[in-house]
Image (cartoon, rainbow, N blue to C red; front, top):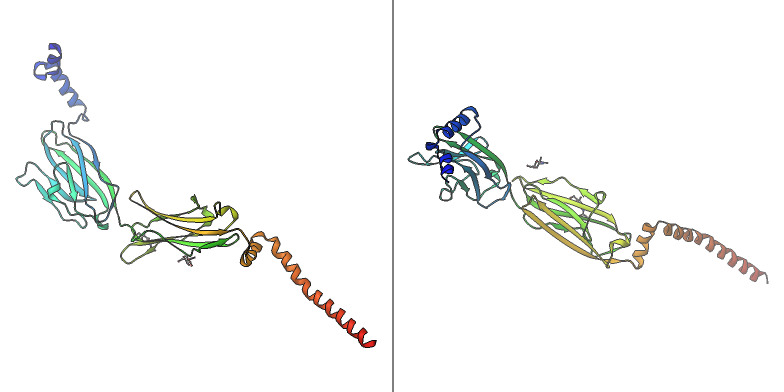
Length: 299
Ligand SMILES: *[C@@H]1O[C@H](CO)[C@@H](O)[C@H](O)[C@H]1NC(C)=O
Ligand SMILES: *[C@@H]1O[C@H](CO)[C@@H](O)[C@H](O)[C@H]1NC(C)=O
């Protein structure tokens, strides 16, 4: 116990003190102040406030200042030694809520698309070390789509051999929503997708659209029903889906026969050969009739 105290108390251990100062003197990376991390949400939704945290440990150093930047521009400075410790600088899209900001965090009032950017916290120690560290992270502000994705072009009933051709549209967001199609809960194959480039509105919002196109087979009605689902996602902040189901018809009606012919290939050609026999059949009948008539007139 005594020995422990002897070793850990610098004023009682000139040797230890000497050792420590030698260590500090010869290796520059023994630093007191440490900026461990900053907390900046990678994505935030427009209209929500954001808290940015600067997690540092002074480890005995006196704090000189904490400064926040977006890009190259400073917008918040906390200097405890000043008579007025908080300084705020106006930036487009960056409005600091001073009541919720201090030496460890800064809170931004509801953010807009203009608030996106690279945020950096810089912490400086006062004399004697004047050590400074900084860290940065990107924040992208997301404007959510006006509504859930909409499916257009779908029918209430499909027969085997019909072509499904539908569109999924996600209106006005930034960035554009990523869309995907599912057929009966299975992700659609790439060759069945029809890609469209997002459309930009004058206000910078984008509308995305994805088409789905395939020929219906019996396997698409495992339970008599064809279900088409479209999902729209934006990073980790948005996920919505819309679904439509259609009745599946395996059995024949007039129009089914027609589409089955296209689907099966062979049946349409056999129908064709029957049709081409008709004139021959009619000609034969006519010949037979005229023959019969002439025989009757002879008698
Ligand atoms: C899908 O959208 C494209 C592009 O706007 C359009 O040309 C096409 O007719 C649409 N198809 C359906 C089935 O709505
Ligand atoms: C639409 O806007 C996005 C993002 O602002 C941009 O990357 C893209 O080039 C624009 N597209 C067109 C066709 O203007």
